[in-house]
Length: 347
Image (tube, rainbow, N blue to C red):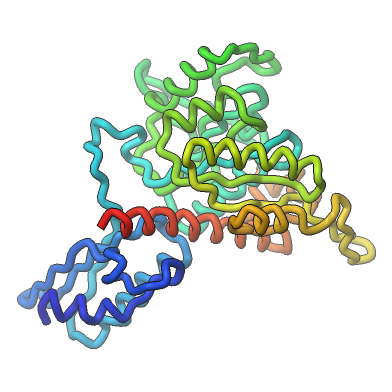
């Protein structure tokens, strides 16, 4: 076996999303065959660790080379033209913003369960609660430990395998936050530079509702892989969600999809399913704007109360947990599409 033989076999492996084989798409970075060691190393341009579709590509590569008699070693990386010194968050592979056009739609709930769900898949995850005026992620996950600092860098605490940073850590309990735009920009920028996130597969950003200074700062400062738009089914939430879509569009940021929260309520007494806020609004919004629909999350009291010790619902069993897991997998898959398409377009 030589490199040409290996690439010929890999030409039978198709990307499940991009519609062609991984060789033609330029998703094979490098092939090294070591006959003496009996190994073949394949570097793939995969950018969304533990996404089901990218894991399937890796499995197909192993299967394509299974009868060669060689031990198959795989690695994954998206080539980057920027040097480490020029990069913002150089150790973070994917930054995913969770946004909403208005408050009260469960954006932070989605962000917490997305982060915990990605961690449960095996990924290295951070969660940045950037909601300046209403940070509540620490309360939602019962995070009692606060960040540590040596005076120069901030070491975030961990909950459920997720590294946490929140504006709540910077303010006193019950203190109102009265910050003008320039101060918001300064604080967000400083946290990006000073928090010791380490090596992460995903950094989930819980943005404030609306389209204000914090969102603008993050769009201008961070290399976002994409954004998740959270809405509820009723028209007033959908109207505001469109504003968020336009904001990301103006800044050439990929929208990974629409998540519909509070998509019906299953009565624990009668077992009936009641669409309290209407039905199909989020899915219709996604279809109208030709965006992926990430899934619907039912209205569930367990989401409000959480599990033992603030455990996110996605880590439990049940209908709502399953719905969150579908959302997590869809977000990871769509992040992979963005990264692989970008790598393929540059070849």
